[in-house]
Length: 148
Image 1 (cartoon, rainbow, N blue to C red):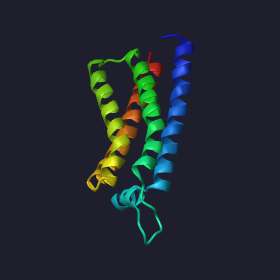
Image 2: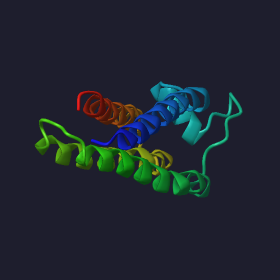
Image 3: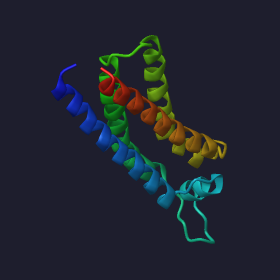
């Protein structure tokens, strides 16, 4: 693997780590990591003066995330496909998992405001699973550039 290619992957991984850390910080600050915090954020709470999210409000947040999540996952996975890995057959599973979990993470707020409170758990699960998958893919990439 060329040195310039390794360096570009390393820079991308560094910025990816910053993005993941900032996502955790923002999610904790705005929503929180609890079932009740997710419900309050999307359905509102009169006692705490939290207004309920509307479908239009969620759509304004979701639209740029659709592009960013897809692009971010695609670039990471693109690097991974061309990396020197021992177990390439598992990459297909990672590709499907990353995009399915990203879609779940993006669209669960609509289900929450639709009255399906269970999807607050799905929102938390998909958020942490998506970040875990991104970290795992990043780790695989890091290993591929350091050991090749």
